[in-house]
Amino acid sequence: MTHTANIDVLTIGEALVDFISTEVTDSLRDAHTFQRHLGGSPANIAVNVSRLGRSAAIIAKTGVGAFGQFLKNQLQHHGVNINYLVMDHRVNTSIIFVSRTSGTPDHEPFRSGDFNLTPDDIAAEAVDVAKIVHTSTWPLSREPSRSAVLQAFQRAHQQGKITSFDPNYSPAVWPDHQEAQKVMRRIYRYTTITKASLDDSHRFFGPGHSPETYVQMLHELGPQTVIFTMGKDGSLVSDGGKILGHLPARPIEVKDATGAGDAFWAGFL
Image 1 (cartoon, rainbow, N blue to C red):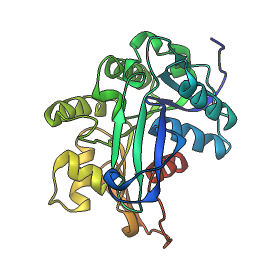
Image 2 (cartoon, rainbow, N blue to C red):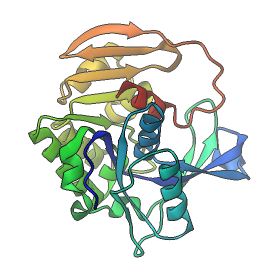
Image 3 (spheres, one colour):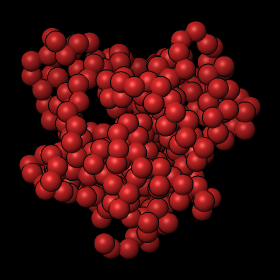
């Protein structure tokens, strides 16, 4: 692989083909027609970082067929460094069906390549030259990608790098909630920054707490910086256990919420 002199943001995890419904609906039961898009939170963030003029690279695994080639071409088109994209003939590219909605999208994944990322697929040189290393809950939900991500985060943490983790837990992706909590608490030991939404916190900690309480609960897991997003109610920014301020949301008409969190992540990083 080619050595990369500079990577502002290295994302690790899933690169998926999103099939997003053309119908506006909260449920996939009512969706009949779908359009193909590049997807997966790490892939989306890498693309958005590149669009913002920064260097981005991704470590992910896909198949070698048409869907894998589609993802490779899309990432290249948007200027993402794909030196560390692993295309493996032994797996299929993971896909997901998603409803187009202004609320929380309904989704159903069909996984293969994404969770077959192994520790040997993690290029140490990419971690070593990256300024920020980022991942999400998806690759942690299954082995061997769980071990691969934890290895990368431990290496980055030991070098004093900024690490960021998106706790976008979904029971559809990770049905074992107790296991999810255990593994997520483990990666938080090596995490500098986290951004959690109200929905994320409800799923991880349970409902019934104030935003300020959720922020403190996240700090207690290890991150120095916590961003807490609340949709139309804006965001809280906290560092070192102290809430620094509230960022109001700009009123807009939401037509499709898919990828909104990834866009926020890219801008923040």
